[in-house]
Length: 66
Image (cartoon, rainbow, N blue to C red; front, side, top):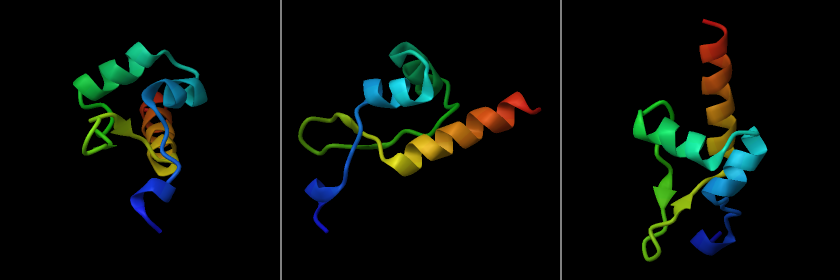
């Protein structure tokens, strides 16, 4: 599978899936609450995977139960 076959998501799509604002995603990244995803080598856009979204959900859920 080549790198272009992976169904990457954009930050605003991740925000929609998590039902938060894009600014919330950026704040979480800035404060290291969530890990930075890989970036496209040319455009430098963040390349979120479904696994990244799942990991963020897990992090947020764990924080809510503390």
